[in-house]
Image (cartoon, rainbow, N blue to C red; front, side, top):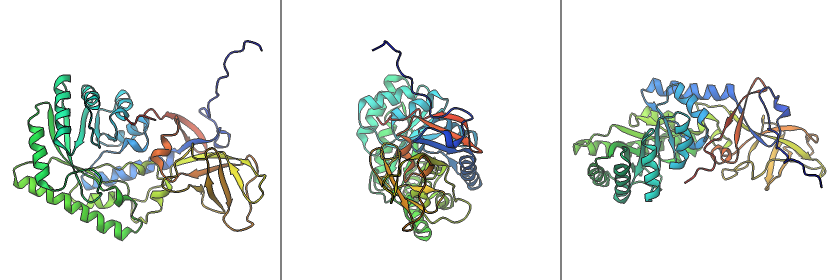
Length: 378
């Protein structure tokens, strides 16, 4: 066999490539819809006098964060310390780790990051505070600390003001730590389908946070920031008067799961992220098979929908295949080689499966955005 050079994988697309010619499966962004989503939520935050701190875990893409900050966001959230590093390198200088950490190595990494950016993190145990204080002191940096309170989610966070006051006292013992306030997040609210139920339970959760804020004030402890909320509850979070900062993430892309929520008023976001795929087999006759399965998208929140909504339904996902059938028995099916768009069920883990976002305007590629924080889950 001849000594030949390695085969280079050609790019899925370049600037100017039409949508139909993108090599699939590929994650594509409708820039017009994406920008309208960003503008819509930022305008609502500005009108409510609430800061917007979008969640980077939803997109893991510095270009998205910079677009949000350019519109007025105060910074971003990340869920893991490692996830924050590409954003810092890209010029994002205010990052909240909306999660707890429990190892000295992660505390040291966060303390190093705090030399480059304004960093904060959640705690719900005094041992976490001590890890952070030691690491920040050794690094010569300063870390902001939020006590996470449980407002009904039942995952992380302490219950009640007494526990918060104990942790506030623990933070005060470390000169390299800065008390920032409370994180109050209820993830389960984000996916309650009924608008009225979501409203009622969002206000109930906000009221639990307000009780803690009031108890802290009575004890002489200020609470400069209450951060939390999300894409599904944002309209109620703004109205509650409790949150000073909203952590919505999925609104930028809008997956199928969020679209299943009943929404009214101005905060109805558009689908802006799609998985481009191609019909690769029609041999079965009763269905077709596309080249997008579990290795291209997450199905933890259910199967994707075919976009635009119509006569086709995505029925089954396996590793590299997706079965698509007609909505009505005997309905027409696409031909071999037909390009299709899917709306994934859950945008966050779907993005984490891709190296880049292929961004289109008017049906052609305008730019390519690296998913720089892909796989950074430590």
